[in-house]
Image (tube, rainbow, N blue to C red; front, side, top):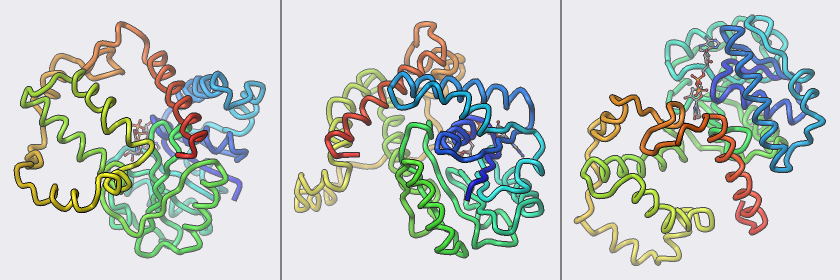
Length: 313
Ligand SMILES: NC(=O)c1ccc[n+]([C@@H]2O[C@H](COP(=O)([O-])OP(=O)(O)OC[C@H]3O[C@@H](n4cnc5c(N)ncnc54)[C@H](O)[C@@H]3O)[C@@H](O)[C@H]2O)c1
């Protein structure tokens, strides 16, 4: 498998194209407009500079990766007609995915593997393709050029060979593939993150703590243990008999599912959308989004390096 097509050049797509190009693949990146593709190219360039600053990319290879290995096109047939692996990273909208996969089915080689980056959608029910044994979900995490985990979700008809081929490619790219037994909306990591995030909204809406205090509580307690113990091993350390008693404790009630948060609604109504608008729960002091992301990415890369040295990653 050498020819890769990435459909959608947004938050995820540009970085997916970059990961494959860095791994030596010939990649075609497709989106609906030239402007989006040029913005994606700028983002990839900035990502490579950050990786170079962290000592993880040879900057003399920048032109090879960006100019020679990645081709940008707004023409879908041109993007996918000779692709061996097609990664779909378009909007999380069932209709958009359905229409795109129906076109991919017409345009792609029958041997091409079709991988959706959906976060929650059961694409196996939504999309119709001639070769469902070659359809699967590969769920990456932002930013894909840094975060190792890729959840691989086979559908009811996905062949074992397709799963193994994709797992092999991801491993060779230095990623951490995790094959799930079956589809479950949100898969593993997002479900866990969502459970904690719903509790976070509840605590903030109830006025129990401020966002800064809440983050301090996370970072100085269970957040610190997670990189070393994960969640299940943490329970082993606490003792499963203790866990059994804690499960019986009925004074803890999970937050009610309301489909909204007062604190989030108030911030959004003030135009405080987070990093992209300079303010959210926090005020980012007028720094550019690029600068804030670069700082986060460099810290993540340092942390990952350290965790690798400890044998935890
Ligand atoms: N953002 C994340 O953190 C994240 C993480 C994991 C998975 N995902 C999933 O990845 C997918 C993409 O998410 P994103 O955050 O990159 O979205 P995004 O909005 O940043 O980018 C989507 C891109 O797809 C393009 N697009 C839309 N319809 C298209 C079509 N028919 N043909 C070609 N291009 C089309 C858009 O122009 C846009 O550039 C979604 O399914 C999302 O759930 C996102």
